[in-house]
Image (cartoon, rainbow, N blue to C red; front, side, top):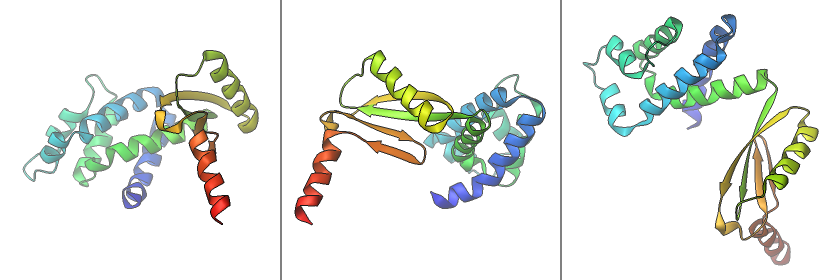
Length: 175
């Protein structure tokens, strides 16, 4: 996976730079997300790796109808360089670059059960204060956490789950 990210990083940076020039980051984001979703399908992966598939046909399969011409040229460049399999990584890195430029932190809050809206707003406000940026929250449920929540905000992970606390207690008692 790290090799794929290493290969994808210059493409994502180039795509982001081109999207910013035309103030088209949102359109590029949608186009790359669509292409990445299609390219991630195992059936499509087999097709994209077929040696007789022309670059134009691959672009036709992955491009959103009515997409920006520069997006189609970018996809064609990926096809010519046999890098279409990197589309999921490119799209993910593109979104990270976009969030950073827009000064937005994306956080995933995983809880043992559904969190009330007031509690999510409290978490959002605390993260906004900590990072000094706007915060977008995505929620998930994992009953194995027993209680509490785990907040994953990029490089910062805050484990306030009972499962995590029990694991730390076990480590402290064993050590």
